[in-house]
Length: 115
Length: 111
Image (cartoon, rainbow over all chains, first blue to last red; front, side, top):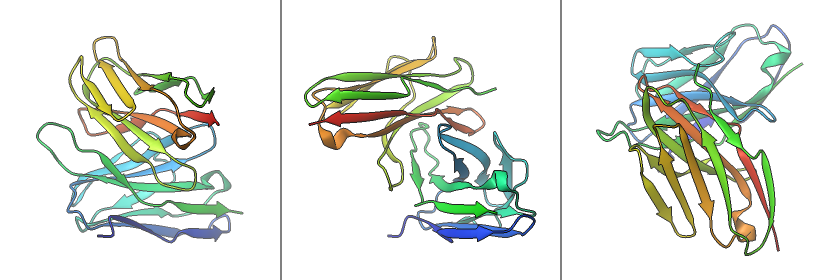
C-alpha cells in the first residue's frame, strides 16, 4: 500500500520556468490538500479539493494552480516560478467520515528550489 | 481569517519530565482539531483527531484535551523520552474542509 506519493522529490527551476507536482493516493480518499513548508511558518495551505473536479483556494494560493481530474490525483502547477516559491511542498489526503474524524495522510514532500 | 497559534515555539526538557503545549484556534465554524507528530526528515503523522467540546484522547504517554468554546487544545506528554523529540503540529478544520496548521512546537528531550 503506497499511501500518498509525490513526484518529483526534488527539482531546481530557473525563474520563469513552469512545472507540475503530482500527488497520487491509492486510499480512495475524497479530500486532497497541497501545503508548503517554510522555516518558522509551519504548513501553509495552498489549495485543496473536496472531490474529483473540484478545487478551492487556501491561505497562500497566488502563483499556483491545481487540478483534480481523477479522484486519486491532485496536481499542483507553477506557471512562472519565482524565488519566493522555493519551499518544501507536502501533499495530504483525507477520507470522508460521518463523524469528521478523518486524519490527514501525508506524502514525503517535494523540495523545490527556484534560482 | 483562520489563525491557529501554538505555544511555545520550542521546548527543551530532560528525560522523565512531563510537558504540555497549547494550540489556540477560532471558536466559530469548528469541525475538528487535529494533532500531528513530525519527526525530522519524515512526514507528519496523526496523533489525535478531536471533534467534541470536552474531548480527551490518550495514546500511551501522550494525551490531549479540547475546549471548542474558548478555542484551545492542550497536548500533554508524561515522562518524556528522547524518542518523543519532534515537532508537534495542531490543525484546525473549519466547516468548509479548509485545514489550517499552526507553526508547531519543537520538543527536544535530553537524555
